[in-house]
Image 1: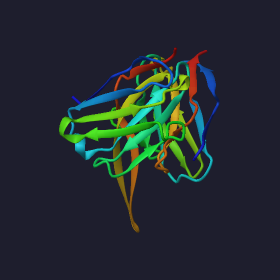
Image 2: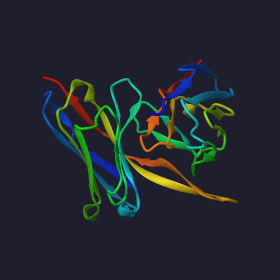
Image 3: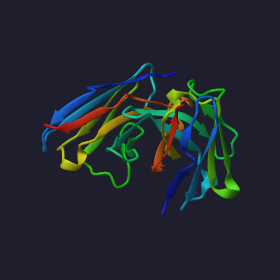
Image 4: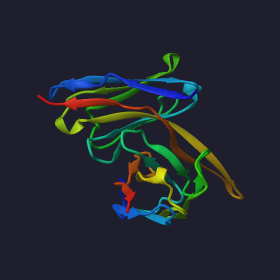
Length: 129
Length: 107
């Protein structure tokens, strides 16, 4: 069974750090890009960060750039999110999600369409004094 | 960044109704548009990818259409288990963005 299990959430004071982990199983982890997506209480989904299969391509939302660092350890089938200088507005449920690409072939070539097809249950981060 | 908007923000419908949700991108995103369903206390679930491709295991009453900047998610005959919040998401840019969501509840 394909599964993602997040851990590492908790209550932390503003300005402090926290490291989230996501353990993957049931698929070949190093074949896929991965993402962190968060959801503040009562709010919508916000993409936080993504990392390619080999860590060669990494992206961050403007809201976390310079404070959060995404990484992965393919030998351990694990994804991480190092969160520094935490703010109250970082309070959210953090989901880990697997990225998949669908290839469409056209007369002139092909295109890759990316989507998040497997999600974990999330880990809660609360930033408060 | 590419901004995504959805309309309506919420709607009330009855079982059996045809429901249409619209998503608009701030610039053309070709067909790089996905739809997710989220029920309270649960993780999002992929419904549609590449604007119109149905994810495996998703009922055929769900369909997606559109390209460029305007997209639609349609539920042909609403079922009790479809009451949820629906999000669109663009994958045209490496900086991914979601729409604000559309909550579908019982009339």
